[in-house]
Image 1 (cartoon, rainbow, N blue to C red):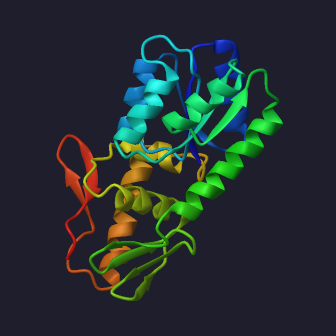
Image 2 (cartoon, rainbow, N blue to C red):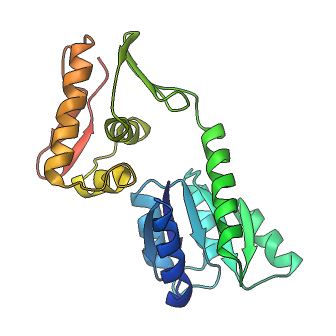
Length: 225
């Protein structure tokens, strides 16, 4: 999963990020509320770990903005506030779970896995873009009902683009999406994977490339055929 940690205490965020990366998650860290909001609205995450008391925007305001912007990423509040009123405020703001500091990393990992399962279950079972279809549950791709066999890395790239068809993805953003699948990736590797996706979809019957270059910016999904 790709996870965003918004936490101003480096004594918490550093070990937490290290533990999650060892579990093969892709992790971004923001040390204040404003930076966290910027990350949250410009990248795609499965889970956001969010402190309430932050410099700049506080965690409750970030959560309200996420829900107001229709960003449905699972949010787990990490905070020293432990009263019932605090928990009610966080849940009312749109949080999906609440964990009081100090916490055990094992419990946090279990809660993240649970939120990841919930996020997967709540997604649409299939993404359609004209005749191009991607089913996240079965990890299947078809074009006009013809199977397109992709590697895990190629699938992750195409899924990111299909979930956000109007968004431009830089190579760095795509690298973050596939980091858990490959030990060695780089700009050249991303170009190769995109070339392979294009070739395989064209082989299944597409008349043009499903992924287009945006000069000087990156890649986005092409308009449906």
